[in-house]
Amino acid sequence: MVEPEGQLESPNEKSEISELKECIQNSPEAIEEEFARTENDWLSCFSSRIISVETWLQNKEIERVLAEKNDEVKLKLEALKDQVLVLRREYFTKDKQVPQDTKQELLDQLSGLLEE
View (cartoon, rainbow, N blue to C red):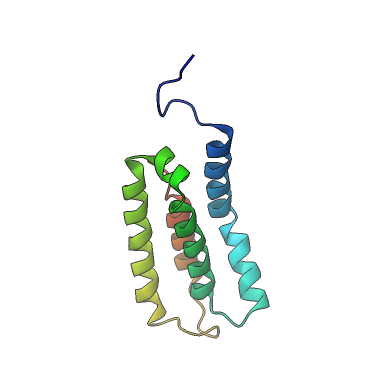
């Protein structure tokens, strides 16, 4: 029996989407780990996670699974990158800490990328 296109994900597609979601979900811990072990400021560590997500979004299987939603996700990610650029004007060194509520706002936006 042939399944209608887009209805069922193959195990490979499901695992790739799951890995993207896991990448996003694990971001707070990964950012703090990078921040603790490097000289990078918090926004640079956050940007590392953005790069990881962007890399996943370039995966052809993920693009196909996300379908029309892919453009929306990429637009949200671009807006998040723009916000980071604005914040970098003030918080450009490890000594200048990003306020906790701003960190949480950025993390919430990152975790909401795949939500409707």
